[in-house]
Length: 237
Ligand code: SF4
Image (cartoon, rainbow, N blue to C red; front, top):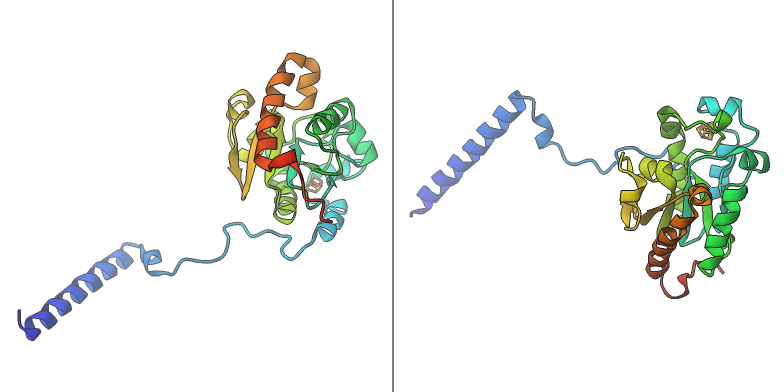
């Protein structure tokens, strides 16, 4: 093939590609020609916040109707450099009074589970998806979850836990955006914003169904194995 033939072939290819692109643009597929955006799909409203500023923002939050009936905001507690984070549904009456998650009977059982793992509440971080108590302990509404979720996402981004343990059906389904039952979700890790998420039964469920403690312990053993020797968390010291 002569040099001239090669040039002709090249020009033919260029013309064909140009024709194809113009056709795509006419059909409304101009986006094909645009470079990919580096921006995240849903940028956090709390960009640049540290944990203390995020807490201040939550404590004054009136973004959803739950602010009107709460006693206090239950932001989260524990080691803000923890490798292990527990996430429940929403504060109950005791939590709403004391401003701390998991302090009622279910909370005492969670404390026992944490101690059985060789840790204390100060080693881990404990939070809820919803930061304010729904009146009468009703289930949070979808709009309340959607409104409050950026706080939890930012907590996860700042704390960077290796493992998140979702406590109960509601927390697991809300975090994983699924309708699947907790009995099918538990027992294995799921990906969640860079962390490994282990759904397990809620301590309140265990109070009513003590025979399920064995399954929770199986889940916690997997969590400990994932965390490494001793199930250690980063104390930041
Ligand atoms: S539940 Fe969340 S979004 Fe609603 S008022 Fe409380 S902190 Fe704000």
